Amino acid sequence: SSIYADVQQGPAIEVFALTQAFRDDVNTPKVNLSVGAYRTDEGQPWVLPVVRKTEVSIATDETINHEYLPVTGLDTFTRAATELVLGADSIAIKEKRAFGVQTISGTGALRVAAEFLFRQLKRNTVYYSNPTWENHHKIFADTGFTSLNSYRYWDQNKRQLDLEGMLADLDKAPAGAVIILHACAHNPTGMDPTQDQWKKIADLIERKQLFPLFDSAYQGFASGDPDLDAWAIRYFVDRGFELFVCQSFAKNFGLYCERVGNLTIVQRSGATRDPIHSQITLLIRGLYSNPPAYGARIVSKVLNTPALRQEWMDCIKGMSSRIREMRKLLREKLVELGTPGNWDHIVNQIGMFSYTGLNEKQVAVLIKEYHIYLLKTGRINMCGLNTGNIEYVAKAIHAAVT
Ligand code: PMP
Image (cartoon, rainbow, N blue to C red; front, top):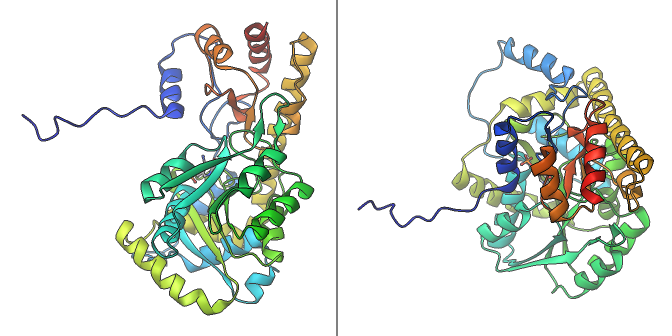
């Protein structure tokens, strides 16, 4: 018999399975509200015009070749990425105690971060929000973390942040535990702490000597303003925390498949920079040797060229305002229809996702009877909504709820 005979079939990954089911569904109308990618009002994927233009200029640039990048990536990219997230005038950058390494998008940043924390700092305890992006658990579990915990975050009854629960759970975390925080546009709830709430979170993390790891997958995509979306991170840095930031450029540049990411390390002093850098270099060397250049070149060129950077800012404003518009419309339509329940949370949430509050049974009705695909937790991707299908979706939600 085959040496592979005992390999067990693993469970499907829900988002990808739903997208496949959507593709296979021959009924119309049908709507895909599952996968996390931007769509235009025509329901199409969008290549940012500034990205397309930059791709063309890179493709025809005779000075660019396909030699390997350094293990920790393209220097002009990592510097621009670190400045984007911490702010060009960040005290940590000025004092040379922050630096970035290029990673395989946000997932790769998280994995390299987890590996470093596990191997070098001997951490094995991590806390992530309940709910969270499901890959947080997997990344840290696969790395070898043995104490995988969640902290309360979402109050399903009130459909808002459960700050008290969050603080109570983090209060029980042992010193040194890694605390994953969503920098903005929390996935899947769309509910972020207010600035005042962030201060309380920072107080507790400081008092309990926990390690903050910011997952920043939506900078600029949430509010349309990259500075505003980085507020929490910069607040922590200004307070003097040592921390990690895992950045993804999948959403804010629409570069999903190009795997552009950065891991920013903020230290108390620049004295630890070289040892950390050398250990991360060795880690990456053993994982995949060095990162791809294509997407990093695009992001680097855009962020480092003022005119292009301005065009990019206009693009993220456009994407984030279309999403906000859809939130407003969906809530309005549900209120108009008299759908039972309060739908204010849809406009109070921010970013790509909304936790609708729909339960598993209602979700099943939407999928089976209306061919509207969403996660069984009731999470929808707001970008899947457009002026052409929002009426249909609102009526379907109404029917599923009543
Ligand atoms: N963190 C969160 C919270 C996310 O939602 C995502 C994207 N789904 C990521 C990280 C990383 O995605 P990627 O690896 O595609 O950059």
